[in-house]
Length: 92
Image (cartoon, rainbow, N blue to C red; front, side, top):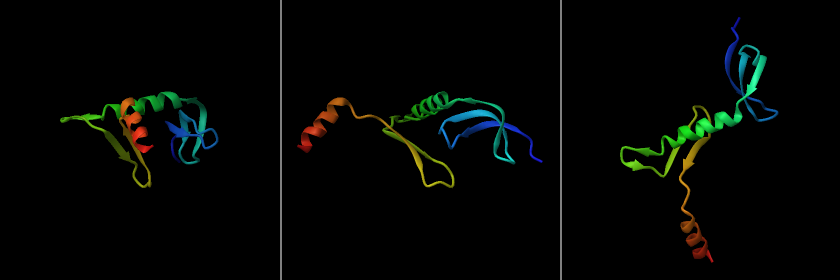
């Protein structure tokens, strides 16, 4: 019999991130859970920003993949506004 454990999970109904006690055997929440979506996303965003430079200075992009998935998460520096305007002008 598995013990209940604290952890994070995503609701398939609301697509919100929760933290609380889970029963890993039954894959259900036990007791109260707290919506931590905004804080979790902000923390991951800040974590990515911490990887946007290395020993050579700023990097343009940082990416990670999660094992056994076909997806990657990528943070990319925004183009400066004047570069976007020049790109639009060149396309006309």
